[in-house]
Length: 115
Image (cartoon, rainbow, N blue to C red; front, top):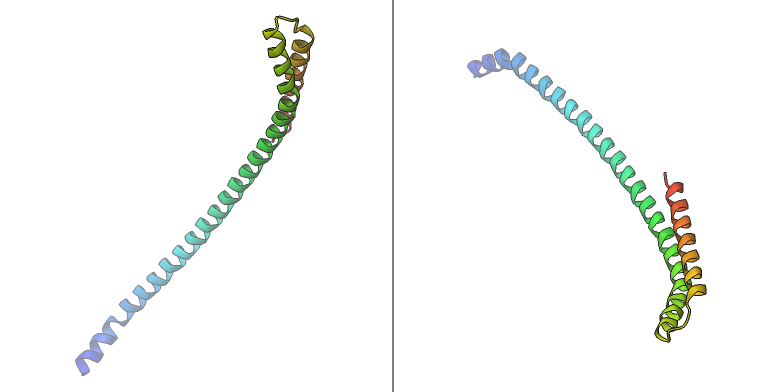
C-alpha cells in the first residue's frame, strides 16, 4: 500500500501536467470550433444572400419575359398568317422589333440594378 502511495505521490506532478495539457488542448479545440462555426455561419449568410439575389433577378427576368411574350406572341402569329397569305408584314415586323428593343432595354436595366 505504501508503494502505491509513493507511486501516486511521485507521478502526481506528471499527471497534473498532463491534465493541464488536456485542458489547454480542449480550450484550443473549443476556440477553433467556435471560429469554424462563426466562419460557417458567415458563409451560410453569404450563400443565402446570393441565393436571394439570384431568385430576385430570376423573378424580374421572368416577369419581363412574360410581358414580352404576351405582346410578341400575337404579333408573331399575325406576321406568320400574313406571310402565309403573301400579304405585307412591315407594320407588325416594326412592332415586333420595338418590343424586342424594349425587352432588351428592360433586361439591361435589371442587370445594372443588381449588386
